[in-house]
Image (cartoon, rainbow, N blue to C red; front, top):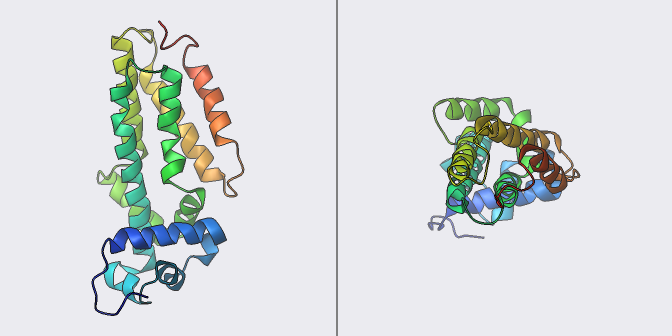
Length: 199
């Protein structure tokens, strides 16, 4: 265990990673302050020193992972003209479950105070699914300019449909059993012309 009074490098990410491991292994009901600090090999009270209780911690963890996902997808516009449109969209869509474990979403939904804090932060401009949607729409617009997508495609609706569907799957896949990749591939096949990227 880390000695008392000694600064722990990257404590925030250490606690976040510990919480995700507890969630993945034991589910939302097992996530307590003690479980997190034990998993992180930290003093029991360290979470409450650095966060506003467990709800504050959960809210900051979810917002941090939202921001990480938004950063990952923000670079999708650089893929315009490379690979196929379907491949690029699939990579962007699958960044959501890579950053947000379904159990974490379930936890946030069951803790009213954490859910309120997350919603307030998103309304105040914290990056979330809207930022991901905007990045995907910008990528599709770039592909249109390159002539790899038809000018008639409603790119905003395509981006909304893709992100909204993946969001729905994350919010409802409590046991992590759905074929997220397969379902997302089938959705993209419906949204994007088969020859997109080869025009």
